[in-house]
Structure formats: C-alpha cells, structure tokens
Length: 161
Image (cartoon, rainbow, N blue to C red; front, top):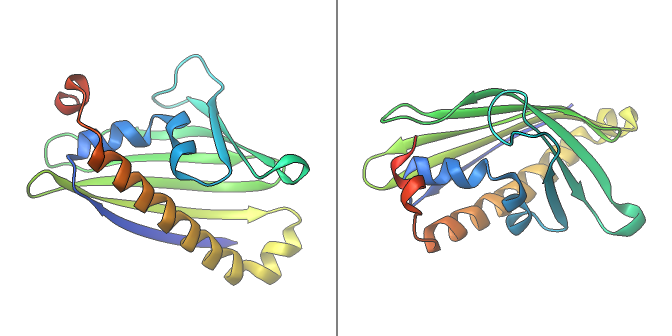
C-alpha cells in the first residue's frame, strides 16, 4: 500500500476551510491536471459521490470516491471527512480533518492509504508512490491555503459549522 499524511496550517476559520474542502469541484483549482465532478444528487454527507479525473488525454484516469464519514467542525471540535476510493486505478481510502486553532486559523491533516493498479506497482514502488503522494498533496494543501486565505468568507460559510 501507498500510505502518507500531509499537514497544513491555514490562516482561516475551520468552517471556511471545511466548506472549501467539501466543495469537490473546487479541488481542481489546487490539484494539478485534475478536474472533479459530483456524481450524486447530494454533494454533502455520507453517501455523496464524486470523481476526480487526473492526467492528460490517454494518460488520464478516474478516481471515483464515496463519502463514508461526514463530521463538520463545530466550535472547538475538529471536522473529519473520509472517502473510499473504488476506481480501476486507485483503491483504498482517504480522509481529511480540519482542527480549529486559536484565532481565525486551523490545521488540515490529509491521509491516504491506497493501492494502485497494477498491484505489483504498489507492492514494489510503494515507498516511491507514498513520497510522490506526500509531495503532491503538500503542494495541493498549500494551494488550498492560499486560495482560502485570499477569499473573503461568504456569510453562510463563516457562520456554518
């Protein structure tokens, strides 16, 4: 398995960062060569589904995901979202948490535990895939932080949890 964790502090309230993270199509702003589309009627909550398409032309692949844990942050309590990945190329799970910190800031933790097809690739190149994932998601979370820190909070995002 390829397993990694990335941590990023964001200078914005946890509710605002959560709202950005669960706006699935918005991930395409931060993740290079990736577009995300919702594939269920509801985009939020357990059972919501979305597909990330990553790559260029014939080298692109779909990464379909279904939300299995949905716990938005509330007050000082952290929020957590977990998805299962059920694609032909990537299987496994991923989750992120958003922890409120003092002042208008929070900490995002992103975790992935995946297998890549062909399975032998993950078995032999697992450490390399984990390193690549950690580097790629670190850049993605830095882009998220820049995006959210520049964006003024919408009234419904700032007050929701």
